[in-house]
Image (tube, rainbow, N blue to C red; front, side, top):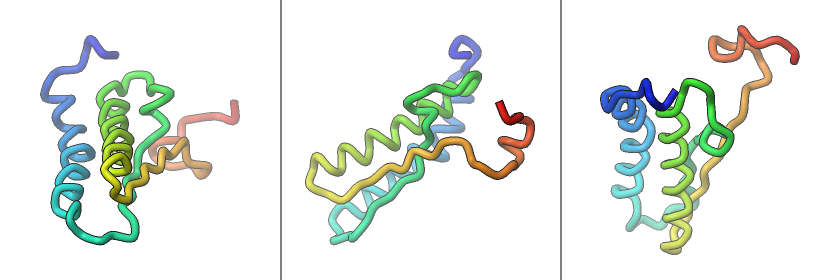
Length: 96
């Protein structure tokens, strides 16, 4: 929940996703790229219970792609949903 987030918890996720994507943007914005794709999550739009920091970091990726497009640069954010195959992230979910 949002109230349980600390600045450190938020920073940890933002650093891994948002900061890394921003640095890639900064380093490549003057290049003639065919594609600039970041992998986001549907959590940015739909939310993700108990993962406000994760949802926020993915919203940054979505916004970065839009910012690039507005500047006339290539940019696409792919907002993944849940994976079909069971994994450590989805293995506990049932068919419902």
